[in-house]
Image (cartoon, rainbow, N blue to C red; front, side, top):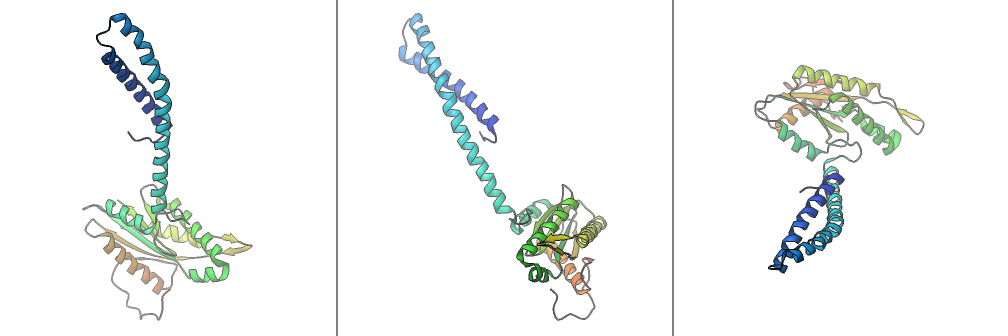
Length: 249
């Protein structure tokens, strides 16, 4: 029996108490047999009171111990799958969740984006400013993707969003909303105001591609968004014909 809350612990204590009473009666009968009926009747009272007084306390304490272990296990799982700064999934948890959701024949869309010139934010406002910016971006993502989407911080300033059962057009619109809201962010830090933008790549699968392939397509689209000026949303497709830049940050 898995103890998930105090009610489960009480339920277990009640079950253990009832079972203990029946076991106590059985042992008493085996010890005293073939005693007469009056002796057996007299023995029923202590045979009942002993487990009734001991079993609830011991079993409830045992249940609370298991409840603590269960909660600690959940906390460890959360810590192992969560990005400590933003509260989003980390890369590994996102990958596992994406693999489970990308079933054959199911439409899924991946949005990949990162903050533009994020190093400049860190250099100007320090790591605290950078952290506040990332948390503001994460909050913006959570507000936009709804309950079915999953979001993760998959790199320093890189984020991924998987939208199961969401078509390409809707995903592009979602990416554009997030881009617009990020552009409007005004993040206060030590008396200064941080402004930022982000570049997006969007790719769609109909259940034929793996998460690795989908990620590669979205990453290529993200590269094009940076290549073409940043602060924009690009769809997965043929590579750009523009001349390559020396460096795309």
